[in-house]
Image 1 (cartoon, one colour):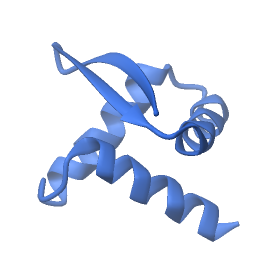
Image 2 (cartoon, one colour):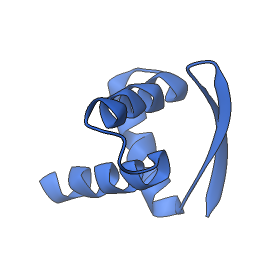
Image 3 (cartoon, rainbow, N blue to C red):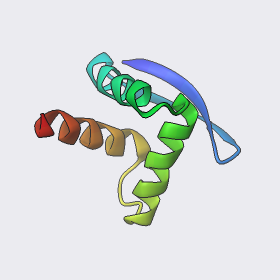
Length: 71
């Protein structure tokens, strides 16, 4: 598990994910041209809009898996 700290909407938090998930996320951050914080914040906004029935780390794992499945 790799833990990263981030400020989301003015609140400091940390996310712990396996390296493989971070690899997928980092590739998409780079391709997007956004900062890491902006990219994660945008995904968090999508999570909340869809109904925050899972925590952010779980949401990011599922999001990363879906990105890999599309390829």
